[in-house]
Length: 168
Image 1 (cartoon, helix red, strand yellow):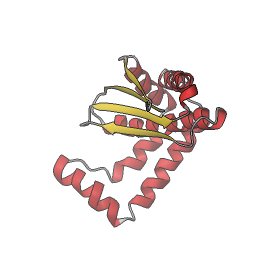
Image 2: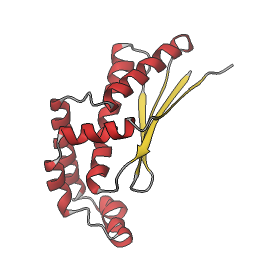
Image 3: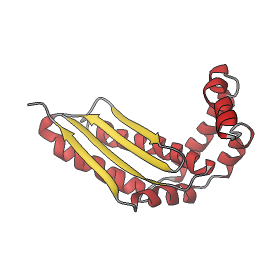
Image 4: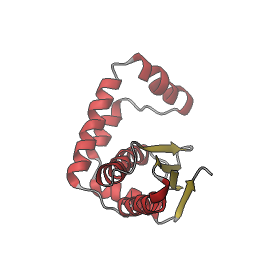
């Protein structure tokens, strides 16, 4: 059986919110994977598909497959994990590790032609946004309270959908 849960909401358009959205994506995936796969052993893989539609809308999709006998229980577990996370259950050490990973990743990306062609140049020429120089400094300035405010603002909009798909 497959379980799909989506939490979505509008956000204020800003590069900071875009970065918080990336952070939320990574931390939510880790939390769901640790619980569903690690704690319960109920799935081989937990995926999180995140969409930023435009710059003012965020979607987080948790998707996994599990035994049909425990699908409702695992759906409830995943929804509870999503609820806790989106309500602000974020640990300082997880946040700091992720922050350092984002800085290191961007430093590596700046050395890659693929990143420049797919991200840096299109943002500059099509959206009139320079995402190169300020990014690392902006990530350094992010706070755990800012991330919590970001996730809470989406969760409080109440746009959560869950779907269970079973074969007949």
